[in-house]
Amino acid sequence: MSSPVSPLTLSAIVTGLRAAGCVFAEDEAALLLSTATGPAHLAAMVERRADGLPLEHVLGFAEFCGLRIAVGPGVFVPRRRSEFLVRQAGAVAPARPVVVDLCCGSGALGAVLASTLAGVELHAADVDPAAVRWARRNLAGLGEVYEGDLFAPLPASLRGRVDVLLANVPYVPTGDVDLLPAEARVHEPRVALDGGGDGLDVMRRVAGAALDWLAPGGSLLVETSERQAAVAEETLRAGGLVPRVVVSEELYATVVTGTRPGRDGA
Image (cartoon, rainbow, N blue to C red; front, side, top):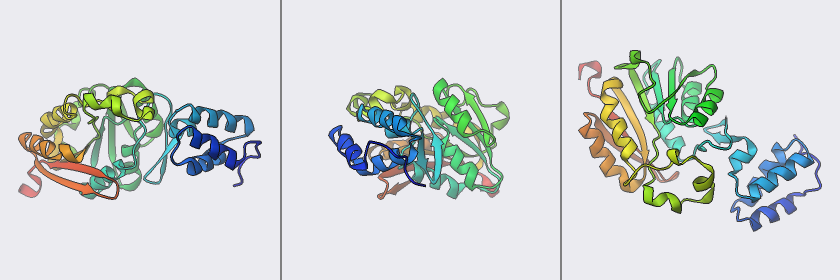
């Protein structure tokens, strides 16, 4: 499909975006041109991006594991490194799995699993009302979305039945939040970023309750930084789970998995 005719040329957009500090100005300009519905829309999109709004919020979507996930102001943008978390979740999922996506944000992780695993029973939850609205949009027809703090809004019938518990919890230490790029610090909800003193406060809460929700052989999967992995591993072990740490150097991603013993009588 050809780009809309516009007085803003590709080179002019690239120059403006580069002046605004956009590192990948050429790629961003191409995306803006291909998404704009006309010259006025394009000019407005370029202006919003140059003003520092996250590219995905300007476009109205984020590319994630081959899907276009609807996002906008007020919701956490799924990061490419979290594709590794989704792949790890898919690898441990049994046939027709029961999947819970905690701290679901836009619902991106659950959407990918629902589109790639057959017979998924999907449940997602987030404490942020804005995130819940976006998740319900992205997971319409794919699963149930609940508003509330971690496990609190989930139906009690899920206890002991969850095969895959994804928890993409916030894990930035409180003292580091102000060091994040402005796109995250200014335009994304702090509740989706701030993980407490060492960044693992929310993860500890999830790990402390996970055993009660997981099916025998079911797994909790969380994303951390590399420096947090050892503490996260011990936290999952203390919660009664068998932990394992896997790292993707390509995506600079670290995933800690904790499995409840017991499938096949083990």
